[in-house]
Length: 591
Image (cartoon, rainbow, N blue to C red):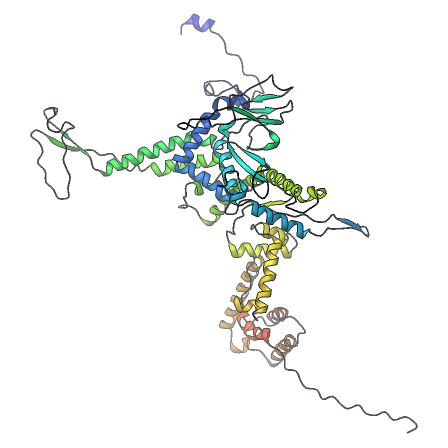
């Protein structure tokens, strides 16, 4: 640049104070977009490609398949979202206090039993191929992979309940149906008809799947289904979004690239294991063909000695495989993918190599919170709307003989999702008992955290107790308990540590002291005997007597105190026979 160019060059605008760094345009941010699109504009041009690639990753990528499996296993689990009816009588006020209403046991039981029967394969769907749990799995997976699914409520279907579900993939929702001059103020965006407030009014559905290649026949037309007949299930990312994004969208490119990289590494390792070699000619002569037009080939066998063709030399190929950096690079990529999917890397990759107890527990807590949030969304978005429609149909038809006036009460159940077992069963169970004892939790909450129902658990306990009593058994006969074993709790651990230290001091004193320093005198023996007698007669608790003895006789070890007092646990003092004296007649003063 010469003098005049420097003199007349255009000066850069000075940076304004207060400008956000991420919004600055410079050489470092030149490729960073500064414009955006609406949610529907993004979806209109990308939804079909995203859906196709998401399905490909599910079907042809091990980590995409693992992601779907994790959703099925953790959001729904073995039993899916389970219905628990909790209807009760209205609360009442009595004496200035609110008296909770009693549970409506009959209504709750009949609703749960009929819903369970409807959920069988022959009743639940119009195809009679899917049970209620199957439907839940298909709806969840379709939302994750396709971003959406439509479930049509078919009233008057030919089954006992006059109600069934029809699953409609997102492909049928006409993405090319856009109308801004339709019914009143309604607009249609990618097949979804909405009013001026954005409320969904109807769906425009194609009768044939546009991707059903190879199966021709029939007429493909678009029909309008009112929103009241359809449960549209999607997890939106933006408020004005009309259709759903596939959940793997943030991780799709990395999953695809990593899959290709892993495939290349696998091929290189296989080729390297084959120990390939090439034949070279010092004169540079090329092979011109012959009986084997594909080139010179040689079979390799163990211990074989081959003679090379005239003028040829053999040169091995070293592929330098396997790549030593592959494991770390693969792990780094999968960690980013797991973060984008909101799940744990260790579970996604099935990698527990460097996991200890603490890191493993922390790695499970956040994904489980994610799964619980998805359970809540799934129950509200899909399970509850289906249940409300089913319940209304059954109450109107008389299948469930309950008054329609109480429909709002019966239509507010609880949906129980899958819960996970304790990571430290003994410690976590003891902690739960401690919380209940200290009033920090309830039996209902602790059982719910394990996916159990309080009423069902208590009923089963009562049945077990009655069955044991009928057979003349007690719980101790089935599960013998060692009375000397105490339940470990965090507080007990501290107490046991202090007691162990104290016992160690006592043992040291007993071992190093003289006999006259450690032996008890007559008065001490008498005092100790009085403590034993008081426990035997039930005057003071056993543990209190131990603590008194430990404080009064510091040189007696805890082991020795246990030997003295523990036999009293099952000791019953003999009942002394008392002669009843015969009443003596009372003589009057007058004789």
